[in-house]
Every structure is written in structure tokens, then in C-alpha cells.
Length: 328
Image (cartoon, rainbow, N blue to C red; front, side, top):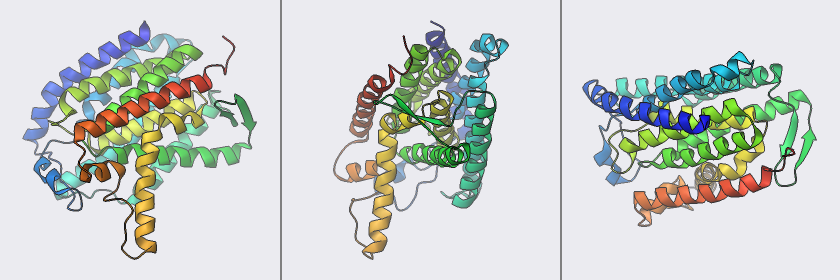
């Protein structure tokens, strides 16, 4: 019940914040610049307010502190740790968005700076989870229900790069109206259900709030979008997704539940690599994958619904693969 109330509260807060935030962003001329290399019909989205992710970030923060006080009083600050990492990622995105708006072009922080900042945040987050007993260097493998013990230093390197990769994969998925929000809402619901099943109440509150906050955001972001989440929102979501997985000590579950993030990222890597190897040839019409499908005649709504449906299916599969980790 607490998770459902957290989701409902976050939905209301996000929706109300959006009502005031979008006009404010317009007044500040915080419009999105569209890349020249993207589909040409996306140019009509030029000027749509960005940084709309602020609405679900505010909702998330408010709900976590309102609904997790009982856990914090009992010494479980895991939801706050997850929120803190997601906020740091969101702050990196905010700096990037602000730079883009200021320069009136679709370039902000350099890739190198983003990587270093995200890597530092990931290492700090993982060390904190380890110190507070929420994370072990024993890698849980879904479906086969075994754990593989690793040296902490080896695990830390592996985990840090997984987190950075996840953060940027979610960011890459944010390329169509409602896409990253819809896919991540399904992932958040999965983590809310899993947290309840495993009795990780604090993380469940965070996940429920994330799902509700995203639903409120989608009121304004579903096609045709009145606002974009920007890197502020997409990097926050990436941080939230991977942080929940590590807070539950089950990072490999990101593989099935994040199947769309992985497909989007791999399509981009394959395209760039093949282009360089063949001196100009392409495998996809355009990368990442959602643009390939667009150029193949798929509408934005069809892509969003298909990708979200695939995510739901893989989340159900993932749940079957992890549900017997703990004796019920």
C-alpha cells in the first residue's frame, strides 16, 4: 500500500509541477535544439521546452523523504542513497542542458567530462552501499539462482562501468516523444514489485515514486510532446535505474529489464564501428535503433508502444528469473 501511495503522490506532484514548469521554461526560452544529423521532420520540434525532467525529479525527492522516514529511522537509508546518485547524474545533465541552451546548439559538456563525473559518482555510490551493508561483491546470477564471489576491487571496476554504461544508455534512448519515459516507467514498476517481493521497502518506495512521477511527466511528453525531459531528466533516470539494481544487490537483472536500452546502445556502437571499418557504409538507416525504425515508416507512437511492450515482456521474464532468490 505504501508503494502505491508513493506512486499516486508522485503522479500528482509531477503533474502539478509540470503545469507551472512548462510556461516557466518557455518564458526562459529553454528550448531544445535539434541535431542536424537527425531525421529532418524532427526540426519542427525545435524550441520545445527542455529540462522537463525537473518535474519528476521534484516529485521523486519529495516522495522519498515523505514516505521513507520510517525506513530512515530504522537505519535503512538505501532510498536516499539511490536518490542522491540519481540527483548527481541529473545535475550533470542539468549543466549539459544549460550549456546547450546558453549556446543555442545541441552540444553541452564534452563526452570526456560526462564520463569522468559519472564514473566518480558511481564509485562513490558503490563504496557507500558496500560500507553500509547494502551491497556485496558476490555477483547474483538470475535464472540459475547462484552467486559468484568476486574480489571487491574487481567487482568495483565492473560495477562502476556498468553504472556509467546504463546511465548513458538511458540517455541515448531519449530520442522520441515519450520513449525514455514510457520504457523507464515499466522498469520502475518492475523494481517496485521486486522490492515488495524481496521486502526491500525503501527501494520499493523510490521505484513506485519514479513510476508515478514518470506517468505525470508523460501527460506532457507523450506525442506530440509539449516538453522534453532533457539530459537533466534522462541522466537522472539512468542513474535511478542502475542505482536501484545495485541497491537490491542484483545488477545483472539490468540485462533483461534494460533490453531496450541495450538494443539502442548496441545499434549506435555497431553503426559507428561499421561506418569506420567500411569507410562510409551503414547497417542501419540511422542510429540509434528508434531512428532506423522511423526512417522505415514507423510512427513515434508505434515505436514507443512497441519498445514499452518489449520492456514489459522482459521485465516479466526477469521477475521469473529472480523471484526465488530468497526463501518466501
